[in-house]
Each structure stands twice: as structure tokens, then as C-alpha cells.
Image (cartoon, rainbow, N blue to C red; front, side, top):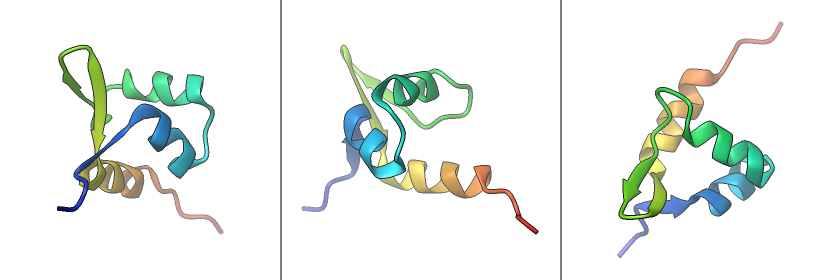
Length: 59
């Protein structure tokens, strides 16, 4: 079965931001973070969508 979510630490590595910045992002309105008990995970599809929405055109 394919993994549906990643941890905040995994998201930081994938996106290329620091761990503190990743935790800052999960508290931002509109960011696709899900709390399961005390743990926070990010749905992979939601992260991809969110990144596409954040993209800006250059040039």
C-alpha cells in the first residue's frame, strides 16, 4: 500500500526547508496538516496541491 501521509520532518526534507520553518507552515491557514491525536501528518496529495497554489510565475 502506498503511503498517504508524511511527517512534518519528512515534509521539511521534501520541500527543502528547516524543521522550524516546517512547523511554522503547518500552523498557516490553508496548509493541509492533519492532527491525529498528538501527531501531525501531511497528506501527500494535499501538500502537492498546496505547493501548486503557492507557485508564482517568474519572468
